[in-house]
Length: 196
Image (cartoon, rainbow, N blue to C red; front, side):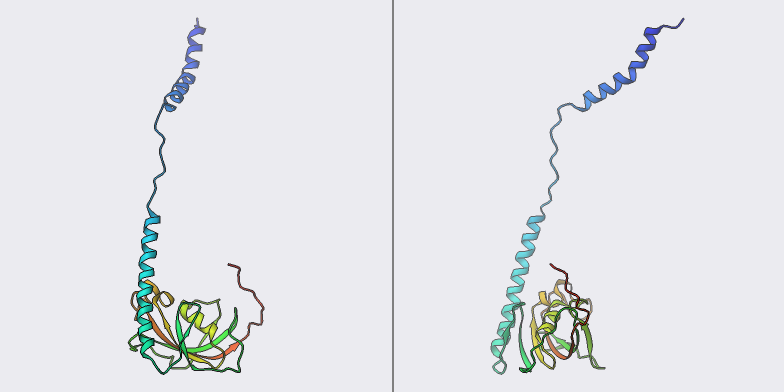
């Protein structure tokens, strides 16, 4: 004969085990706090070092400019200084988003030693804000009008930064760029830049 009481108890064992596990799992354990990494300290230190580096580079550029009594320097709103070698006061249009700029440039270090010379076969083209250029060159091409040229003193943050160009330009190296704009073709597509 089958003992029904024993069967009922056997059916309840898995249920009792589950209940017991639940009770043990809900015991008083101290709350675990999220692991906090001190990234804010690293970022603050990095920003502090970058500001000090920029201040040093700007002082170096200013000392070079102070010795130059021939040229009239312009302090750009973009964080670099320059002077015109050729200016076209009658021209009024500067490159805007999507325009095609035909230009040439050369780069040298702050002592005037040439790093990259002008392109032997002539010129480069750049679709404004739609292609990659280092920040200083991008900003300079938007300042110069068709037919103008200038010499630009870029701190490393406006040039190739802490990585350099992985070839001839070293880490955190300020540069001098001689830039000439030959032609600016207006953007016919009327594509607006993405909002920031």
